Amino acid sequence: MKMKANSFRVTIREAEENDADAIKRIIDSVAKEKHYIVPERSRENWKQAIKEIKERKGLILVAEINEMPVGMAHLVSGRFEKNKHVGFLGICILKEFGGKGIGTRMMEYMIKWAKEHGELEKISLNVFSTNRVAIKLYRKFGFEIEGICRKQFKIEDRYVDEIIMGKWLT
Image (cartoon, rainbow, N blue to C red):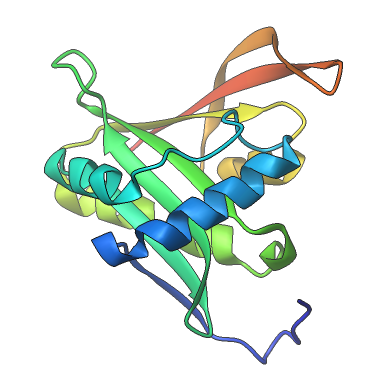
């Protein structure tokens, strides 16, 4: 679905349990493309996942265009005492809505939220080396490459490196 640049309104908001089906659809759609996220399909119970992320004092966002969910993002601290100062970030945006600034808006929201809540000191993420658009977005927000896992994935008979990126909030 193509839209003119000024014919849509982007809204970024915190997810609620009733967003579970939309989040699942977004992740399943991105997963089918094979080149952007590791899972082949979304988890089944996003209602439970939304609850768990909030219980862990994390953040889950929904991006909407004209009130239609087109993207999601999450930021959740480590599960253990040793890594709870690190927030782990993930973003999914439907392919047809790329290039509209949605990723930038979600990143702005998450980083601001992380700084205001004060419990996280660092944000970490993993990205395929072939996902140049995402890497460019993360670099724009000050993320740096901290490691590379060579040939970590095999996508359509081609090896792909996994890049680990991080950003200190302090």
